[in-house]
Image (spheres, each protein chain N blue to C red):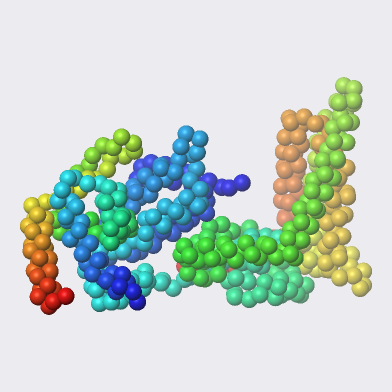
Length: 364
Length: 107
């Protein structure tokens, strides 16, 4: 499957495969940079767009509506590098200056913080951070874990970064994430390198494992829903009436469990204790966190089953709304009545603010 | 360095002359110019030709007019201006002069 980008070239729209679009954009960006000092810049760019548009149209037919990446590569090769026709460039050529000398000013690439999906464990935060800092990603991950064990705030900074820092989705972003110059050859080279990396045996094995686990998890969820759905149609109207009372109650209990779980998780990470109960001696924090996740899954499962038991879109929507409302209400209550939670939220906001200002400083 | 590479700057310098010659005939469209130049020593690409044509137009040696095409948006058809015609005949004379000089030095 391939993402398709619709572009407009001199007033006509064309559909391009995404990598092809990136190639074309970098070609036009370079053309623009080359013609920076030319008084004909706007006109030449318009001409180039029209010529590319015509070539694109030549690639399409009644049953072909998308220009493939290979075709874009061919179009760009046909167009050839854009050369300014002004005296300076012509003189340079006459002086015997090599033609291939990059007249394109290699602007100092600026590094920016991104999340990077390729080779990420989870959200790509560590990966992006490693690229930004120029470190090996393993060290960043170890550093994060160690810091989290000593100061809980690191965990919140991580979550905040997960939410705020954008993904490097385009080739240009990825170049900015590593702080390397961005041009067509680079994209192709890097794409090749990534391909080799994906071919790496260990990497493939890891991907396979992940797919397997997520499939199992989906199956489990499916079974749970099936069981609930099978129960529902066999019930008589009276039982259905009782169900309709139980669904909001189940939603309420589900919300209570969810909020307690979040609070427990936060207090476990920051104070190493849950509602005053410390972790038993000798059990590391990460075991406690995993235990909490498992506990939540187990405890919340029956209520989820009841909520989906109605097996009717209307009920599902209602219970979803009730659940959301209860969760928000409980969070609000927790914020106002538990000073500890209050402080934590404030800390979280502070961490988020810090991250935002760091990021905006990085960008500016 | 082979001969073709050595003479690349000369061809590049002459491209403007060649374009003026082509435009001097009938009104032409860029794709037609490229097709005409393709099999010759002056084979070039849009990336070079468009900036050159824009420069020639700025110097008022060529001009273009829009013409509807059977498919797609209207196209620019280039033609020589009066100033361009004068320039072309000057260049033609100069080229003959060069040839004569070269001939005088023997084979």
